[in-house]
Length: 188
Image (cartoon, rainbow, N blue to C red; front, side, top):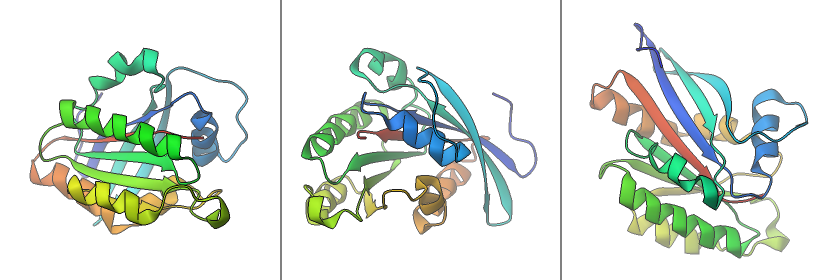
């Protein structure tokens, strides 16, 4: 990974699969093309403008199945922000999210910003996880919780929210040359 140059902060985003097809979401989100194959480790790059700075994010999809858990635990240590995405129509996905939160507690730094994202919020009739339930967990972790809709680009919704600013400022305040954002997907 190259060092940051002037106004570019390079970062790493780790997106982890729980063997439920999240790879399809990432490929669609980043390329707007349908997926054609499955890869255990994939890399995408996203550039975001924030406060006059260009932030380059490398998105690493590290396959979150149980057998790859030892690979992903090493990424927690450097994270300034961690995003955990779950399916609001699937209680099992929500419960899996709790396991990832346990790993975050174990491996991440004490002052890491955490964001819980419930996907598929537009499927109101199928909702299995009430927002209030997720909010209680988020509050207990001093985290933020919000919902995104099916078909909407997760990154577009995420990078246009005030929560993105929290992650970025955490990296800047620590005077780090690298911005690290860890994302855990527990659904699809």
